Structures are given as C-alpha cells and as structure tokens.
Amino acid sequence: DNGTQVFSGSGNLFEHFDGGDGYDVMTDIDYNDKFWIINKEIWTDGPTDENITPPGTNEYFPNLAKSWSNEEVIYAGYSRTFVSGDQGSNWSELTYTAASSTIRVPGNWALASCPSSNSRLYTAGRNNNNISAQRRGMWRVDGLNSVVPNTYTYLGSKPGFPTNYTKITGIGVRPTNADQVWITVGGFDANVKVFYSGNAGETWSNVSGSLPNVPILSIVVGSGGTALIGTDIGVFFRSTGMSDWTLYSNGLPRIPVTDLDLVDIVGGSMLYASTFGRGIWKTPIDLSCEADLTVNETSLRGLRNYQASNTLSSTTDIEGGDGTKVQFKAGNQITLSAGFVVEPGSTLQAVIAPCNTGPLPDVRMASQNSSASKAKTATPFRKKIFTISQSKRKKK
Image 1: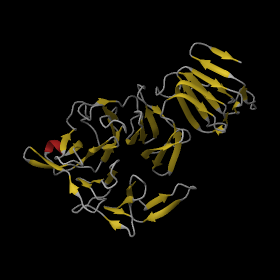
Image 2: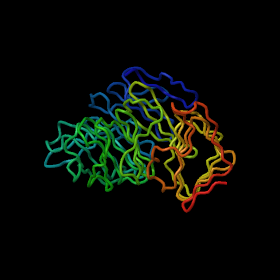
Image 3: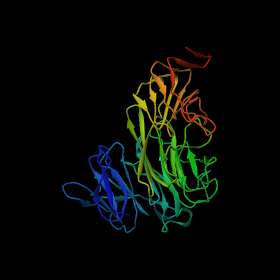
Image 4: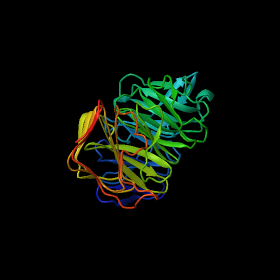
C-alpha cells in the first residue's frame, strides 16, 4: 500500500523504487527487467519507466506471470487475462466461445505459468460477463506460443473441484510436471483449504487434511513435489510421502503469509515469505534427496533440515541455544564424527527414514535444554563417532 521496494541482494536494506499503491511485482528470467503494479497499471523499467497496461482495463490489483523459457512472454490477470509476446508493448486477450457466448478468461485471483511447459497457463478469477455457469473458477489454457489456436478448459466443474469456496488465492504447479497442480482457498469454510490434481485439473482431491480453519493465502511447490503454503497463521508444508500438513516455523510470527518463493542456493533452497505487517522472512530448506550427504558447515543455527536416501554424516557445531533445532534424516545410516558438537540449549533430532516423508516428530535425541526441575547449566554434547544405522546402533 506504500509503494514498491527493491532488494539488491546485499545487506538488509530495501530501496524505495516507486510510489503509489504497490501490488504484484515480477522480474524476467534473467532478473534484468522489472515489472510492477501501481494501483491499476502495469509498469516496466528501462531507459525510462514505461506504462504497459493492457488497453481497456480499469481494475485494481492485477496479477503478473511470465514464461519460464521466453523472457519476452508475460501475462496479466484482470477480470480478463492478457498475454504479451514483447514484454507488454502489445497485448492479446485470452477468450473463447462456449454455448454461443464469448468467454473472457479471468485471472484476477491467481495466475500460474508452468516451468516445464511454456505452452500452458493456469488462471483463476471472477468475471461477471461470463455465462452464469462460468462466472468464476479456474481455467487451463494450452497451446500458447504455437501456431494452432489455444485450447481452453474450464476446470471449475471438474470432479472433486470445490463448490463452496470464497476465493482461490493461489495456484502452485510442480516445476518438473505441469500436470501436477494445487490450489489454495481463502475464507473460513472448514476443510476447504487446499486441493490437488495430478492430471492437469481433470479431477481433484481435497488435501486440506487437518489444516486449521483459517484462510490459505499463498503456495509454492518444489521440484520434488513438496508444497508449502502461506496461511493466516504461518507456513505449513506437505511432501509427497506425507499424509497431512505440518507447521514449518522457527521464530516466524503467527502472521498472514501473503506470498512464498523458492530460490535455489548451494545445498538446497531458500524459502522466502512475505507477511502482512511483519516484513519479509527467509529460511534455508532442503527439498532434494541426495544418496549420500555430508554436512560439514562450520556451525548450524535456527531450524535446519537435512536428508539423504542412503547415508548422512556430519562434523558440525550445532549452536544457537533455544530456537535451534537441526534435523538429520537418512535411509540407512547417520554418522556424527569427531568435531561434532551440540551446544547447550540447542537440539538435534536424527532418525532413519525415507526422504520426503515429512519432518521428524518433536522429540529430542540429543538436547541440553534445561527445565525448572533441573540445573540451569549444561555441558555440550560431544561425540568422537556416533553412528545410527538401520540394522543396529553403535557408539564408539
């Protein structure tokens, strides 16, 4: 509501970039060009800032999306959805004919392009000009960027798609499979929170599980199929091997999480979360599953998760006290070698289990946390070699 800010990647300061009511923002594939919303208009930078709003639009808070293979292709979602092949210099509206009526595909709720398919776009929104059966809901557009006409599929009437919902707040697509798509739902309808389709929206499953009855505001999906959602009370996640959602938080306030993003870093990903009223947060998260993993960082603080399908080993100092909880998971063996330390107040959890089966239960295998009934001093937990294996446990 107070303009658009830009973070350059160094330090912790944001630069005030533009004024007005700032809404959705986006960069191109190479992070060279910026796109941002001021009130009802779309702007881009260059030698001079340029207004590239699609003609005939007059609505607040449109959505932006981009092609993941062609930086010239961008999308804009109002109560009508537009596509541009030249970064906004020219726009075409996505429309089709059904029951002798022209259907204007809305994108004012959510847009999602597909990293693994530059010819597919998912949209969600409301358009009162549509025929009554399709005024709101979700669409799939195929055939984009090709010489054949686009194919439009209304998903709002497909089996399993929710019928009692307030608003679709987010669309998450698995980066490696454009057929796997999730939607998040706002409002306070119990058990109407998250829905999943593995066949491009042709059928849907309710995967709300035991999520609390609060609005779900955002979603991002990792390449392995782990979904992370932003809710009114924080971040939850669910991997492919899990049967329910788990709170993913370490010091994050109970605050609405309005957007989520995953950025690749060395050794995993960085999860970014924007909040309503408490700024932007980040945490490292490892959604990969290497066969053998060695954790040899100088020290670990905060909430950290590491997993391997076969073996995991570490010589790391776990420090930071209360609020530091490190989780190790491996399919066959975990080895803590000389130099490994768990400092007072910090917590280590380790278990033999398959990758991507969710977090460990909240128990402490090696912890120096003190309680009111115990002494308030503690000595570090140190081992020369401590091995946990699938067949037996041994200590040297």
